Length: 71
Image 1 (cartoon, one colour):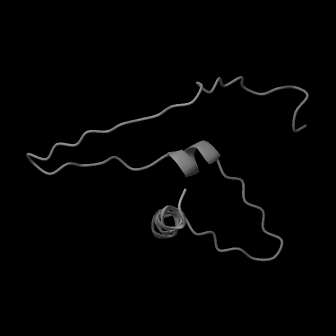
Image 2 (cartoon, one colour):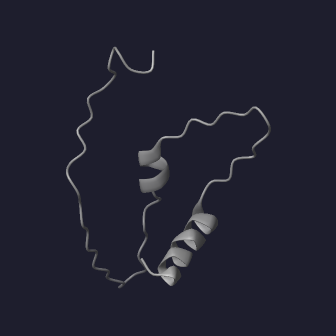
């Protein structure tokens, strides 16, 4: 990424991200998939058409809870 592209990325997160009002001792638990990859729907104006290109990596396989992790 170029510096300008990185600045665009940061600006988008600053404009559209969720601010957490941190205080000393706070802990935040955040779902990365929802937070970093979720978004509200896009509503098109009447007569507006958009094309979307997507590049995907390997499919994420959700395995559910693992008995030997996090407990």
